[in-house]
Length: 117
Image (cartoon, rainbow, N blue to C red):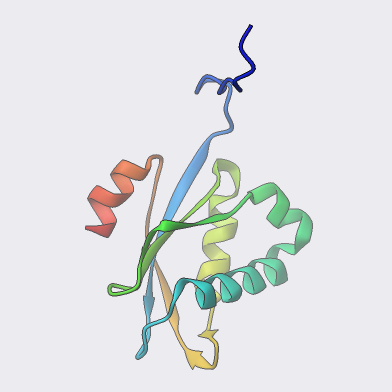
């Protein structure tokens, strides 16, 4: 018998969605400063329990510092709540910003193909 962990079949996994966003600002921002601003805003809007249910995960592989675009993985039932939190981000650090949601997809491939390329 093997001791390797087995992955769940896709039919048993929690369904996720990817929210693609763009940061509109005069300055470029690194991923760390965006993560801090996003978590602060999500916690203020949704509370700790809401964030726990939404399961947001900011995807570092999808973030492009040059274009200021990226993606967040969330639970499918909480897409609109996290989307609202992203729109409410008004500053990163001390720089005023606007976060524009580009779209929502079900796979990383379609996210990269349709929104990030």
